Amino acid sequence: MTDVKIKITDRDGVLHEIDAPTDMNMNLMEVVRSYELAPEGTIGICGGMAMCASCQCYVKSNHKLPEKSDDEDAMLAEAFNVEDNSRLGCQLHITEDMEGLEVELAPEES
Ligand code: FES
Image 1: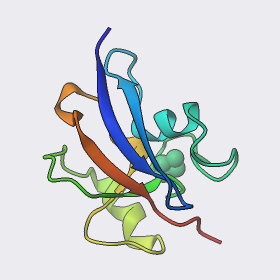
Image 2: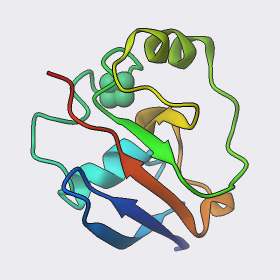
Image 3: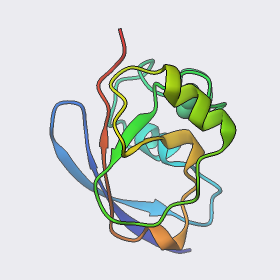
Image 4: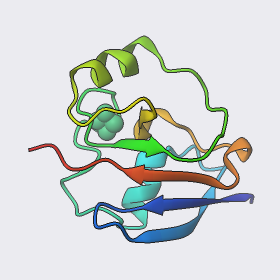
């Protein structure tokens, strides 16, 4: 089993350094949920279908991540609080390339 270290700043500004498994086919939204870094019901609302933006996060490190799909692009075009470094956590599958990744959860949409 291989883990990568990821730094996640939650919506209260608290930094968490967590181990994320690369061999469980998880995405970043599921990792945030499994560590309970955002209250239940505020993240992953669409179940990871790129249809809600509740999993939006800002990528703070210089990692080269896979390009956005058209679905992700379209959802981010409609979401609030979108920045140049916004991504949908559910569209980011945990891979070994993510060692040391730093992200911040976007504010909850209301
Ligand atoms: S969980 Fe809905 S867009 Fe990611």
